[in-house]
Amino acid sequence: MHKVLVVAYYFPPMGLSGVQRSLKFVKYLKNYGWEPTVITTSEVGYFAHDQSLQKELNETGVKVIRIGGKGPNSFLARFGTLKLPREFIRKLLNKISQTFFIPDNKIFWSRNAVKKTIELINGENFDLIFVTGPPFSLFYEFSKFKKHFHIPFFFDYRDIWYESYFAFYPTPLHKILHKKMEYKSLKAADKISVTNRIAKEKLIKTYNFLTYNDIIIISHGFDHEDFEKIPAQPKSKNRMALMYSGIFMVYNTPKYLLKAFKELTIERPDITKNIELHFVGFLRKENVNLIQNLNLQEFVFDHGYLNHDESIAKIKSADILWMMVGKRKNIDSILPGKLYEYMGTAKPILACVPEGAAKLALSEYPASFVCEPDNINQIKETIIRLFDLYKRNEFPVIDEEIIAKYRRDFLTEQLAKQMNIILKV
Image 1 (cartoon, helix red, strand yellow):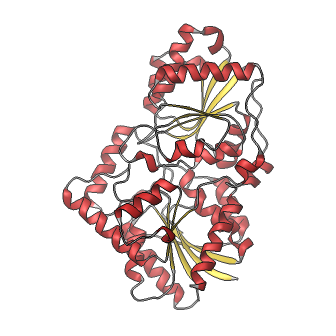
Image 2 (cartoon, helix red, strand yellow):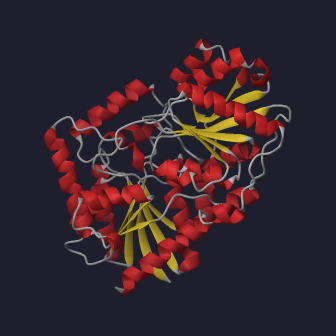
Image 3 (cartoon, one colour):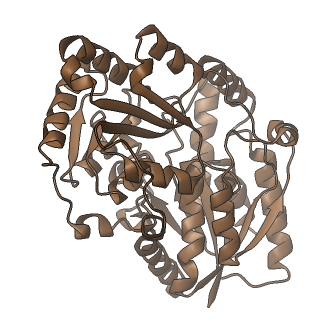
């Protein structure tokens, strides 16, 4: 067995989709000749904690080392699970944070992660270090570490860094520093992975020293074991359940879907009386207020934040799954992890997305129904079309081979093969 040190800030017991990529890699790496050890945070001040993912981690038997740090995250850790603020407050706090912390407010923790790594490799041999970001301060701090220790580095991008759709640059200097830090980080990497082709193209275009072979694409995915072990929750057999699972922030909103459905209640009450709108995760106060203003309470079911196993049971019970990516600068490279869990159900997906990676991925899924994210009339007409297919029981049937390539175990096998190549080189 080769040994890999995995460094990931977002990791169970934290919840939400950003955690799952690292967890599932760690879960399946042993099947492909790699024994992982994980360095992650002991700071648990976060908006979502997931006991089912923590239980799954415990069952893997993987060694996990938890460390703390300084900064705002260590202060919030004492409060445990935090209440998610309204979006305009979250945006304000995020802009303040990006103004004073470069590249991000996890930089103190990232430095501690490097110190812990040095401590570990002085007493134990690791064949490779796998670092996943965000936070991108991990990439930068480990790139400095590479000058002194000649261990291969594998950097995994879950999102883009420079000129990200999340980025805020209050001054030109901020923008310059971010690009310079990413340049130095990528120079130190032996291999880089991204989740989609557009993200890969952006990196190659921005940094001319990168070649096509330097970057591999390992998409997000779904764990087939989740779908085999977790049964669907019962649902109403007389109404079509349209469901969303996840959080609303930065790049997505239910506003256009809700307004389209409101128009439908006026124009086609015969249809809407047979439809339920389900939300699993963080619906947010502002969206609850919108539902009330549109007088849609009788159609909406807010299930709140659920553990991963419970959310899988919910989406398996739905008739149609909905997702949304809004129009925003550089949004074309975003590929939400939830998309592949949706595909894992083999159910129809109503996707309100612009041109980009998400739309390209949906083009390979026969049961996708794509709309412009803010086109209310188009969304309304698509719901009517879906309801007609539902009543006639004529939803597209998905061939298992189409979605099998997104299984987490197969994706981990791709990762392990690339890690083996690094060792050979």
